[in-house]
Image 1 (cartoon, helix red, strand yellow):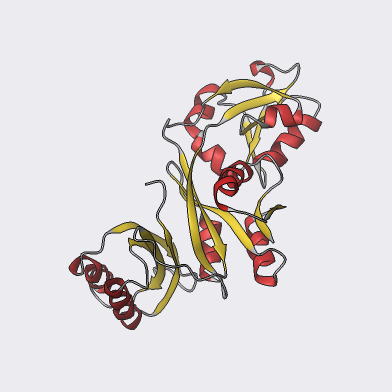
Image 2: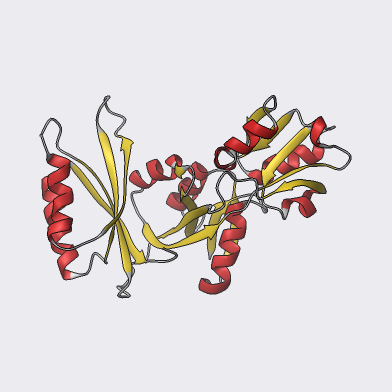
Length: 277
């Protein structure tokens, strides 16, 4: 059994999954994949049995590539989640110092989470996006000098780098939520969360409010509402909603059935045990 994650070894996804696997997985091999789109592709074709992907960050918000790919997932559902505390460090090659840094490499999420720090400390540095923090660290390690990477502190030992600064994220409370996607049906635990996605009826006044009020009237708490472009025309959106409860719960099941009949498109992305909130 393989569970895919955004690799290579040394990414935040790797360390988060390692923590999750220690408590929740048996008989699984952790399988690094180069990108989030490739993770979903490997899952769809059966190259991996499960995938473990970031879906949102407390500073930068939604991981849009994950959100968009969840919509197109034909087989599979969210089966679990992990909320992981993230602390970023700035690293460079042995012999470099802060004055030598001309380019800072990292994944888009860490660069966004450290935006204010970089602007203050390295206002003239070029920012370069990489597929992962580990891939960025490898490039810094292989370069002649003048480069730095933002990532997990363990990358320093892994790639022979030195740490220039620690806890450089713009807010001390920095958490990333990861989800595990597989093809198994989950059972209610009594403390669950359900994720759905839908598009409201076009040009129908109050359609979104009417849908959301269904949850309120049934006493169901909404924990997250996020919109993404529908990608068909300007002004049309998909709405991602997380709510408390399991889709097998009688009350929530009835609400979701009404929602499905009231919207243009609808999909239940899964129910799973609520963790870390």
